[in-house]
Length: 225
Image 1 (tube, rainbow, N blue to C red):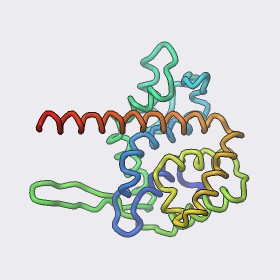
Image 2: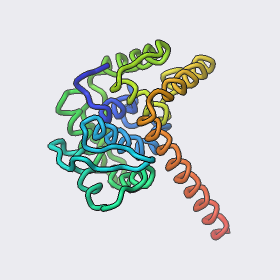
Image 3: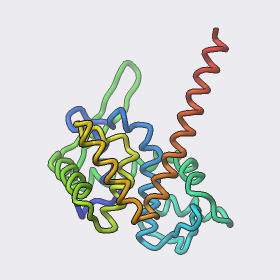
Image 4: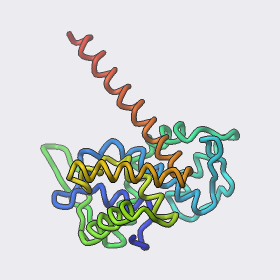
């Protein structure tokens, strides 16, 4: 897979719509948890943290990478190890800073550009792919690694996070092929519990977020009624 991109950068690039730009609708919410989760795995691979009993323990609180420094700075505020899911929920509030830094990194690498958009009085910027071949290559590699059933540590990390991004249907439009891919991924995760624990934590946090959003919407409807 692309060696010049970090795990979080690969996931961000995969979530950008290849034609329209911006984050794909099905991945918009999940990215709030997936990106911090990916950075956690980067910290693990760099030896900054370890996972024990679904909790994060800091081993080395120093990092030059700005995103790594951002998470470590927060992790270092707690004396006792906290659960992965709890940290994912906390880091979701920093998602704007995380996305901004990822966009800066990917723009510098020439993978995306930030396009200015406006509507009435509102102005914003959205990421647009400038090197679509990078995405096509990543998608091909993901499909190949899943059905091959073999991957190195970095690749298995990406695959474990990928299933929580909401992009499975995009990579595997065929329903039967997508089903086989999910089953194969499940088997591969048995051999890599570190990434599996983070992926499961993301799913749990997402489920809570959806539940809270649904409850709030229902309460508002009753109140307004």
